[in-house]
Length: 250
Image (tube, rainbow, N blue to C red; front, side, top):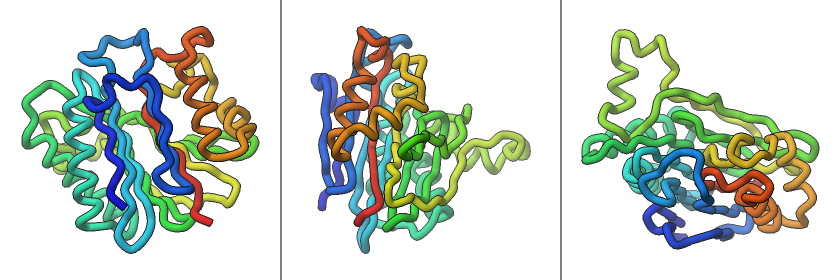
């Protein structure tokens, strides 16, 4: 299967998009508007879904600021690395993220920078790496749990993460986070930009479980969430949304 790559610049004319590239994976995208924060273009979020050689699937979300460039560069480079060198664990995935960031920074010709969140699902095991403040959430029947911390360092700009980590004071700040978890048979992993947060949607994160859980399928759940996130009358649509929902392959 070819990777599904949806770059921000390809989504400028899209109002809403829900697509299921695999039976247990659904993507949901909406530019939204009017936006709380000024944007250089209507959509600045990019995402990708990669069917990994040897099995498994990886989801990538990049929420760029000051233009879409950094998010698009990071997404393209990380997709290529995931296909050519599929990682076995979170440590190897972290190395690919650092390599993708180096490539993105090397060719930067703008002021853009981006979050970068990637989650790799093999069976029920999830390895993930996170830079900045996109959200990795576990949706259960009665609860929503955030897996990754919100961080202040962004990727794809003018100074590579690897150089920050090597700096004598680099250890004083957490520049990226990584981890591994097991996804339960009735749980859903949500990989999303911060456009889903309450300040952008007027929808508290704990309510996602109820809204999603009432849907009869993964795709229907994605539609339910996306329609609510972008509902201007309900307080939504204040930021771009790019999200991937994944369940353990059964």
